[in-house]
Length: 352
Image (cartoon, rainbow, N blue to C red):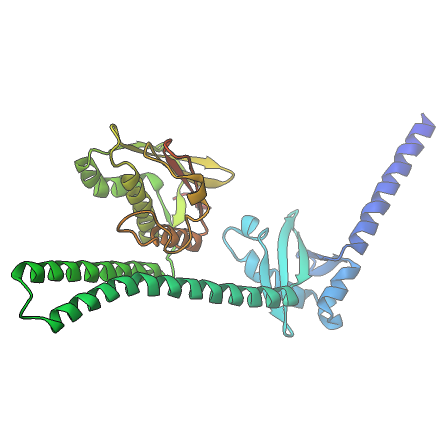
């Protein structure tokens, strides 16, 4: 019995030594503050190497003000603290997370992300320029075709106005108006793309939002024979969104579903809501024609469309709006088996 007790104590000591060695050799700065005593309770060796500021490393008030104060002041500190935050000190950028360890201790994990941020900024700039080039190429194509058609029609009319019959004149006018309409539609879509440069996030009751949204669209959809089914529990959690942005995103998704339901015998769109992994999942499903596998990978690429009058910006705009609300979207579909669109929205921290 004495030997077993001694062995357990020895194992405990080895485990303690192992954790201590791990903390000392890890490349993340670890800091523990005692906020009651206003003292530094613990810091590992990497903490000094990361900060490279001897005076700050030994200054409780300076450390608390830099890494903890603003985060602790948040209403949802227990959740917000665990998210990576950024702070600048002496020209360097630090990424850090704050954890509440007991009531009076704050554990902070710190990394110098100056170089990482610089490289990401360069990569983002390169990616942005590539995307801008791609978008302008698409715009040039989308505007160039109807513009050339319009120019050709006007040139023919200019060269032989006397020989132009009323029927031909009428045909050229109709063609010109159609080309102008295509350009106007593109410009309208581009305006929608840039409309939401910022969002106003608020806690909203999802049931009330969806009731309002469905009431606005169902008459038009019913006129095309499309049935809309909803499965949203009355006690579902609230979400934190921009109401206008979510309305536009859902409208784009529903319009795509309506296009896929043409020529279907019993066209139907269903929407359901459920909570998974602390997120609100909104699933919009249709029983339409579905999407070919080779088309799925290009769905969110600008100007990619198989619609005769589409411009391929609807899903691009939808993804942008959702991203600005800290939300995302994915699409599952098979040709001939309908399409399911899933969007994930953040749940409101405090339920109203």
